[in-house]
Image (cartoon, rainbow, N blue to C red):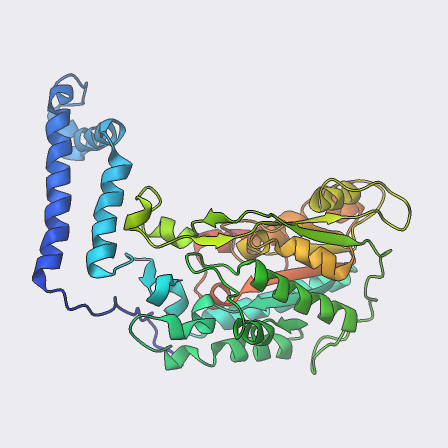
Length: 403
């Protein structure tokens, strides 16, 4: 049992001494002084609340802060400069990011040790949701996405992977299956692929196009094999057998830079290239549906075709509910090609476990032309972290009463 409070791992030790901290502080102080000096002529012209009650209750300082934020020249650049000093001198990534070796960045949340209760409660709710979906005629397969920090622990700058987290993925997988949830192991195929190629972005929390293709193929293989693990929920529903729709993936001839979300979380999105980690470089891929056996025309976009079919007379056999992982690395395109079928992607960026599913079951499409199978992508870190108010609201909006 983990401790009741989360344990954060600190920044990597440095040997630069007190002068590095002083340099960062001096840069921030000088930048702030320069900005304030440039604003002095404007402050006298601002109309601010200045009564004693305004001062006492904080209305004056609040109004001043808003004015300053609007008027500060080069505010984004100054903040980026201070964060660049921290990164270059201290090898620090801030409150949300840990800096690894060779340009690898990691989300601190992935190294946080939580109590087991949130995961246990969430798994019970996932089981209730899949049972409810089963009663609606919708078969469900859950794809558990492993943390990037788990796959690339060797790329950390300073320490090994916490012993308390090593068994977590296997424990979560076992607990989901014991609760009757048909769950796909994505860790094993991603680990195998990682021996020969990078499967996650270095500057982003998500899988890259190679990792997305590996995960999509593993999920599609599980759908085709229909191999329910021991102890899973009995299911009399049949696996969807849509008319095969061929898909093809094309690769852009010219590579492009892709600065990841971890660079943004470090506050370095406005920093010059020389003052931040090198962005990932990749050839963009696009997946399109080819001419179908029924003789339809070439679809302009596979996802648009899936959306159009769902709202029309033909229901897309598969719906994908998930998080930002389902929106990265051309995951849905690779999944459609692996399944030879359109897939409706209802994944939501920046949301938790329940939002995409809640949006889908409350949509008219779910009632008028539901899919036959729901593919539900859930990241390991979101399965284990305590729920916040937004996630609780999403669960309540789903409207499923645990059995």
